[in-house]
Length: 528
Image (tube, rainbow, N blue to C red; front, top):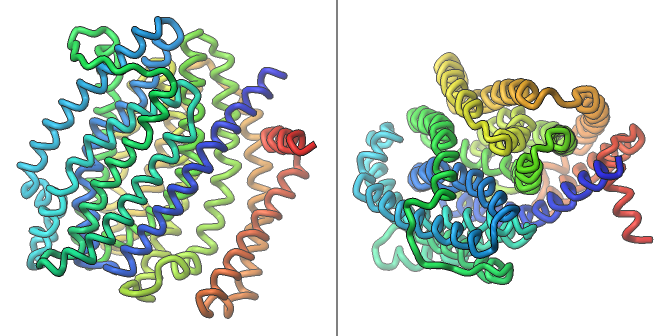
């Protein structure tokens, strides 16, 4: 029991460290989105930017950050545990060189094919004069982002395996800083030379990608990393990473098909639909990053170590604790986003070119995205568990099931709900993914404690209901203040969030949720 408590504390501490760094990044990300909203609103220029940035992001997830990071951490952890330091660093160096060359070639191909890619991804843009051409130009500028961000993911994997979580997590803040400072400066300068302001923001994105890689390198060298500039295509470690990556890439290709389908449908809706969806998803990414991604980063090396020792009971305990902690944070966040969607969107975005109509449309979209928040975050824990037990086939199957479900749901609802159908479908498919992955993983590891999981979930739901009732009535009482000036909106929204969070934590503490109790006891001990 002591070992389980210690492990829960390690996960919570690592996730907390990552969470603080991710919070900084997400706050800066929101500032970035506020700048976009104020300068470009929801429409022509920002629609073009979103679709253009989606292309390198799509390739990054498909070939780089997603599949590469998970596969690399699994193999690097094995090398770190069972090989010499020189062999471990040789593998890391070989991986960096191999993927730098591969992704550079992929980027050049993408630049050459930018026009056809835009036509394929957003055919509806050709109906608006100059919109497809602007999107193509922005795509060509931002595609090299793929190389830097994917190499940053490899470096992050090395640092996480060595127990360094803060620097790689804070690195994305430097991406946002580069995007904001570089992007805004260039957006103000370039129109004087006859270039659209949005081009400056595209160049800023590229600057941000370079910073995200560069800021991690000093921390990496402090761990003792030695770079061996060589390319060995016969390296068994590289083969193992590629072998793990292939099914993961196929699985992620399904996710990218979903993104392609969603973008294509959104581009065919009213102008601004792509922007509304992106603003809402950016906001829901805050709790996903804080909870889902933070716990996934903290848990992945731990699961890999347990799997390397073939310690299945430890995998089960880690999984249940991690899922309970994720539910503890995402379920109340879902309720809060649904009940406060309009005040939050109005407070963050409604100024400059972003209108009251944009607020309503984005808030409706946010509500539908928020429904799937807990499933989206839980999947961030479940997928690495499949990597840890060296069984990547089922996440692939789940991804393709999600594609089929996504197409069916959007096709059936797009005429009635327009862009909102895409947010609804995303949440539904994430929930179906969660059910499938959790059931298969239960079978593959010989079960895990559903009793403990459901007991914790029951307490979380009771506390969330109490919090939701408070928010519902308090929002009605303070409705007039939520429509006031900016300072008034900030104070009242913060008051509602603080009151809701305090009540939720008190109810959960009274119900004695073990994971929360362990964290609270640890904090108390530090202050004694």
